[in-house]
Length: 520
Image 1: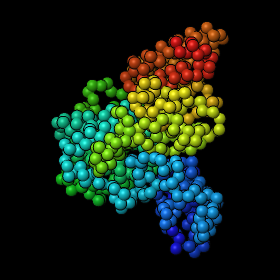
Image 2 (image 1 turned 120 degrees about the vertical axis):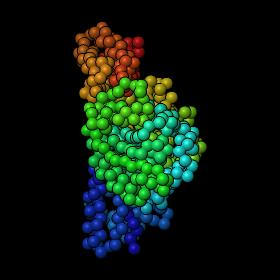
Image 3 (image 1 turned 180 degrees about the vertical axis):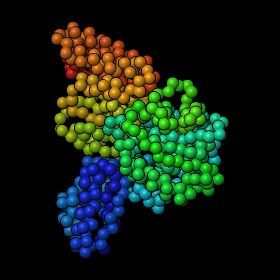
Image 4 (image 1 turned 90 degrees about the vertical axis):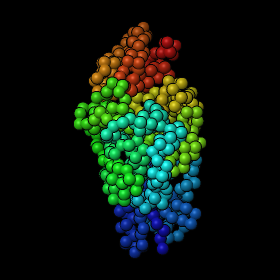
């Protein structure tokens, strides 16, 4: 009897040939008259090994990867004898160093369960959090979220419990839960992984939030570039609704909560919560002035709890295992775990979920294995296209919200894009300003005009015929960064200064500047 086989249905795995491997397995097994139990699961997030094929063994799942369709015949032959002799054999997947040292709470089911199997989800702790929330009631649930120390994983890191208590305490005939799944930062993919691979976790988190704060309806705002996530979520919603986890009587609580998926049109600015709300209302996504805050006056002018995917998906484990369990992970005010995403010029790209406090060096060098090119590391951009460039000299900084703020950087959504010494930082600074100019909603002058002027300043700096000319433009550029950071209405303009200022400070030679002049 052939053991069960597991192959990811994640869109990255499919992009590098997982579907072709599945077809080859089915075809070859039929030709050889072999019984085949092939299950399409979520991804482990070890993307450099995709497609990663796993098989059951008495010791646990054995891995093979990256597998191609051409290697399927030899794999099937090896499975009839000693699988460890195959050139692609990786041994026990759970024992791989990349995976073994992780602390997976959000992604505990990653690579193990089938995305749309309610049976799989329940068998691995699914809906235990919702059951607990119903049992203890809204006040204790809101207190648990507050006591856990959970902070928003979208970038601002605002304490989630304060939002919950604010929305819960606001009187209104209608309240909403809005999930910001407009994952637009470069190098980020944790939201997509979770929505495609473990959609019931997000649904459970939103249902807990809804019955706790008194909201009866929710929206998941997903970027249009994630068609598989959209399709998976919509099917998962139908399954959850049929099972009684959504609708007029959520989990037998007597409370109503339902939700739907809305697809964005690809505007980066709609990742900002108030622009997202305008988009949900059918308007052009433009940043709103605050106050009033969305918790008091959000979607359609009504109290709205807005969180991103990872924040809402953290709630079930907090309820199931307790606030103290969650607080035991992390450091300082950064509690729990964070799914860091390694991308760019990196040997081992993928998802690493660890408690706050590991260093950037551990993440990039120990997990990531350094650059894919083999050239020396030059920098890592942390927190998306508007995150600061962190040089190797600062790689020993703990991955903690306050520690990163202290060096003029931010964690954001946890994306880390790695670059080697061939990258031109002046070009990347220009790109950041150009990106801001193209994606600005246009409401505030610093962002709308400042970003465009910034591109012009960098062009003049690089074209200046002498050192004096470059120095003069560098002073203007630094002043412009201050204006963007402190004068913009939202984080799009405010954060555009981060990659520009950090590139100027740490890599002045790329601009034709002397180090002392760049630091002035």
